[in-house]
Amino acid sequence: MGLLRGLLESVSETLELFYTATATLTQESTNGLSLLGTLLARVLPLFLTNNPLPDGFPWGSLSDTNTNPYVDYPRTGVVRYYDFTVSRGIIAPDGYQRDVLLVNGAYPGPLIEANWGDTIVVTVHNNISNPEDGTTIHWHGFLQRETPWADGAPGISQCPIPPGSSYTYEFVASLFGTSWYHAHYSAQYAGGVVGPIVVYGPTHAKYDVDLGPIMLSDWYHREYFDIVKELLSPNASPRVLSDNNLIDGKMNFDCSTVAPGDNTPCTDRAGISKFKFQTGKTHRLRLINSGADGVQRFSIDQHTLTVIAEDFVPVKPYNTTVVTLGVGQRTDVLVTANAGPPDSLFWMRSNLTTCSPARQPNALAAVYYDKADTSATPSSRPWDVPDPGTCANDPLDISEPLYPIPLPKPAITQTMDIELFKNASNVTLWKFNGVSMRTDYNSPVILLANQGNFSYPPEWNVVNYQQTTAIRIIINNKGPGPHPMHLHGHNFYILHEGPGEWDGTIVRPSNPMRRDVELVRGNGHLVIQFDGAPGVWAFHCHIAWHSSGGFLASLLVQPHKVQQMHLPGDVEQNCRAWDLWTKHNVVDQIDSGT
Ligand SMILES: *[C@@H]1O[C@H](CO)[C@@H](O)[C@H](O)[C@H]1NC(C)=O
Ligand SMILES: *[C@@H]1O[C@H](CO)[C@@H](O)[C@H](O)[C@H]1NC(C)=O
Ligand SMILES: *[C@@H]1O[C@H](CO)[C@@H](O)[C@H](O)[C@H]1NC(C)=O
Ligand SMILES: *[C@@H]1O[C@H](CO)[C@@H](O)[C@H](O)[C@H]1NC(C)=O
Ligand SMILES: *[C@@H]1O[C@H](CO)[C@@H](O)[C@H](O)[C@H]1NC(C)=O
Ligand SMILES: *[C@@H]1O[C@H](CO)[C@@H](O)[C@H](O)[C@H]1NC(C)=O
Ligand SMILES: [Cu+2]
Image (tube, rainbow, N blue to C red; front, top):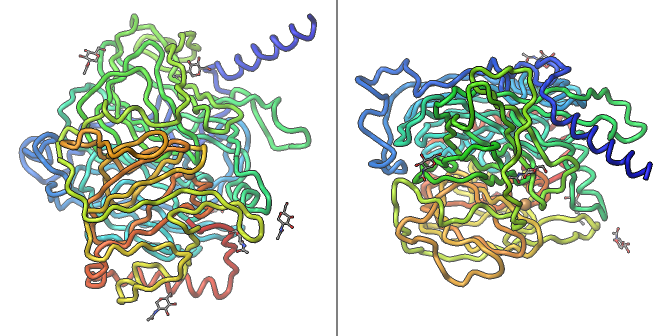
C-alpha cells in the first residue's frame, strides 16, 4: 500500500515537473540567441514589403489556385542575403546541458524569409572547432531548378565546407510556404544545425495573425556523433531512444531520471514555449517536424485545426483535431481563438507516436489568449484521439492539392526495397534498392557528371535514369518501422500508401497529393512518381540514424543536361579547399556521410 502510494506520488510529481509554465532558466541558457517560442518572438507579416514590384502583392495576379508553381512563379529580381556561422556551443534546451552546434549562436537557427520568386543567398561560414569538422546545409523542399549544386548534399552536390572556410548558396524561392534548413553532413543536424524558412506567397485561406514557425523535434542528451558511433558498432541495437520532445526547442525535463554517475548539469522546469493568441482571431501556425527520428502528432486542446498546406503544397482546407508529421514534413494550419473568454489558456501538445522510441514522448507548450496571465499554467484537457498505431501519415484522400495536376503516364516503373542487414563486421546497416550507400566527400557526383563521367563505385548508389523523366517508384518496406521518404528537388505525386504490397490502386489520379516527404509504414508500401528535373537528387529516409546507416540513393536525372550545365567556379574551389584540409586532417567518416 505504502509502495503504491509512493509510486503514485512520484508519477504526479513527474507530471508537475512537465506541466508547469514557470521557467527556471533564461532563454539564452536554453536556446542561445533564438527567441522562438517566447512571447518576444516576432509575429510575421503577410509578405515582405521591400519589394519593387508594383501595386498590391509582390506576386501580382498569380495565385495559389490559378498558377502551376512548377512552371510559373514571379521573377521579382529581389535577392535576400543571409550570413550564417556554424559554431560549437553549450545550451540546455530542456534543462540538461549539452554540447551542440549552433547557427549564429541560436537553437533553432535564424528564420530565413523571402517572397515567392525572390532569390535567397546564404553564405555559410564553418566555424566548427575543438574538434574541427566539415559541414553542408540543405534547403529542404527547394526545387533548385538550374542550381542543383546549391542543394547541400555532401558527396552528391558538393564537397563539405572545410573548417575555417565559407561557401555561398544561391537559389530561387520558386515555391512558397513553410520549410526549414538543416546540415546534411553525417547526422550533424541532430546536434542543432536546423532553422525555419518562410516563403511568403498567395493564400486563398484568410487569417489575421501569422504566428510563424513551430518546430517539433525529438531531442537527445547524447551527442549525435556518439549516437552514430554506437549505432554503427558491431552487434548494436538499431533502436535509438530519444530523451525528450521539444516545441520550438523548449521543454521541461525530470532531472531525477538522469542515469546515476552522469554529472551533467541538469535543471528541472527549464521552461516551455509560450504563444499568444488574439481572442476571436484566426492564426496561421507553421508546423515543422525538424527531429532526427520521431513521428509527431500535434494538437491544441479544445481547438480545431484547419490544414491549408502540406510541405510546399497548398491544399483544399480541411478540419481535424490532430495532424501527423514525419521527419521533414510541414503542415500549415489555421486556428481560431474561439474556445473560451479572453483570459483563457490551453495546452499545445506534440506527442511522439508509439513507433518512435522515446523516454519522454510528450511535448507541451502554453497558448494564452489576450487577457490571460502568461505566467499561469494551463489545465485544459486533451482531445481524446488515440494514436491509431499505424505510424503512417493521415489518410491520403483527405488532402487534395489546391492547384490540380493530373498524374502523367510513367515512362519507367521501378521497385526499391528497404532492408536491414548485418555486414561482414556485424554492423547493422540499411540497404535501399539493394545497396547500403556510402558517399565520397571528395568526389561529388554532380562534378563528375558535369565532366561527363557517369561511372561510379556501387556504394555511391547512383541510379542513372538517362533521358527518362516520368519516373514511378514502388517502395517496399520489409521491416516493422516507418520511414519518412524524402526526395530532394521535387514534389512527388503520391499514388498510394498502405500495408503489404501495392494492389495497383491510385488515390485520386485526376489530382494526386504532392509532397516532398511521405511516410512509408512498417511492412508496407509507398508509390510515388515525379517529373524528373536535370540534376543529382538524394532520395532517402529522413531519419538521421537511418540515413547514416546507408539508407540513401542518388537519382541522376537527364545526365546529358547536367553535363552541359555551367557550374559556378565555387563548387570546384570548395572541393580544392576540402581536399587540402583532408590532406592534413583525418576525416572520421563513421557513417554513410549524409
Ligand atoms: C566561433 O566558435 C567559437 C567557439 O568554438 C566562438 O567562441 C566564436 O564566437 C565563433 N565565432 C563566430 C564568428 O561565431
Ligand atoms: C472548419 O471549422 C470551422 C469552425 O472551427 C468552420 O468555420 C469551417 O467552416 C470548417 N471548415 C471546413 C473546411 O470544414
Ligand atoms: C498526447 O499525450 C497526452 C498524454 O499522454 C494524451 O493525454 C493525449 O491524448 C495525446 N494526444 C494525442 C493527440 O495523441
Ligand atoms: C561494415 O560497416 C561499417 C560501418 O559502415 C564499416 O566501417 C565496415 O568497414 C563494414 N565492414 C565491412 C566488412 O564492409
Ligand atoms: C559476428 O557475430 C557473430 C554472432 O554474435 C559471431 O559469431 C561472429 O564471430 C561475429 N563476426 C565478426 C566478424 O565479428
Ligand atoms: C569516373 O569517376 C570515378 C570515381 O571518381 C573514377 O573511379 C573513374 O576512374 C572515373 N572515370 C573516368 C573515365 O575518368
Ligand atoms: Cu528510416
